[in-house]
Length: 345
Image (cartoon, rainbow, N blue to C red; front, side, top):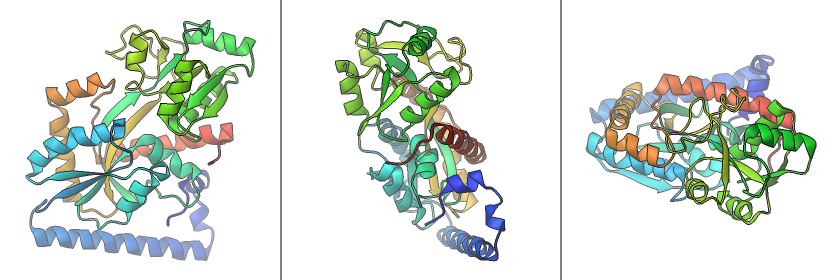
């Protein structure tokens, strides 16, 4: 398996330090080139793409936002390509089961992945010998983006982010927050807030968003930061109080909740994103065809409306833009993880 990308980010010149490392790098380059040639040969042999069903491997169980993103795009993409696009849910391993399945697949465009950003740019920084999000995949397109929403239990005597920070400073180590697990986006997002505001809110990890929400609604924990879909009904019903949306603008579906800049924290810009990837070495014509069809689908009113209903945004990024964005996210979260001393369980 590839080396942990955290080390590559922390020591960008380390692969040039020894002849053994150079040999490994050369071998990896040869393997990648061979995979690319195999994919190109398959493209040339078929003469067109696709000529048979495409499998879309999803890193989460059915019902979650990652699965919803995959199913939102699979049906219209099937029509656009003229072949079935079959969703294959492979949850587990913090995204590792799906990632490794697709990374090892033939780079011919018939095995693709829809991945959650927390798994794509955080899990590989924490899990030893994990997949490499840069070397193992060819970015295709971002499908959905969703800012986080910071919510508190209604009995907590704060109504704004400023009041929450003041309360945390006046009561150090008294507040706690729920996350869906160690190293999750909820975890690192709240640690980012801790670092920005100079406060200490204690982490309480759970095995998934469901159990975390149960304890938050029951009053066992004080707050959480997560994506809108599991929160919307509870906010509307007064069971949770939303303090801020971690984006540059307000969410249309939460018009009364201030954005991060309005709340005084312009750099608290944290979004979950859900993107499609192909195995590294997939021919560019295939990547470009997929990206082009996805962009057209995402521009439709039906797709954009469905995304908004989920509290998300149909935010298209093509292969190059997604690759750049992913690299920036890896660098950003590596710094937060190091500063907060976050380790894998």
